[in-house]
Image 1 (cartoon, rainbow, N blue to C red):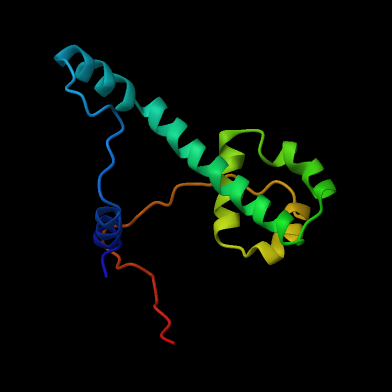
Image 2: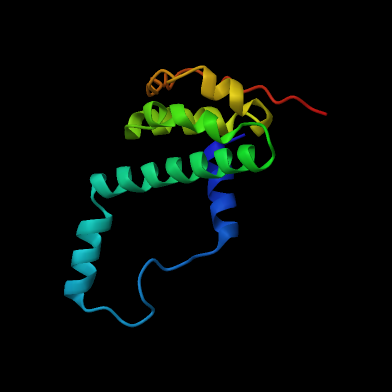
Length: 131
């Protein structure tokens, strides 16, 4: 199973949504957009926005469903103060049900994420569990 192929298939199913107007763009416009949107800083900004959206949706669902109280959000400032902490907590939220939100918030700031070092000579260590 190739995860890259699966991700590409899922993204293709979303279709394409243009991030710019449908009107024709001048070469200067295209150059500017490429310079802005192609920059690593913009990509980091986008990833941070995704993390913020995950956190927002998770906590809103947990609050509405009664798994946390509004007072539980008081500790939120320390948990989401930096893009690195937002990335870490949003990953935990993706892998945790909203039923566990109070416990997740009580654990405090998670460790920062560290990129994995991939050894190209080893196979993936993913084991599928069949139902």
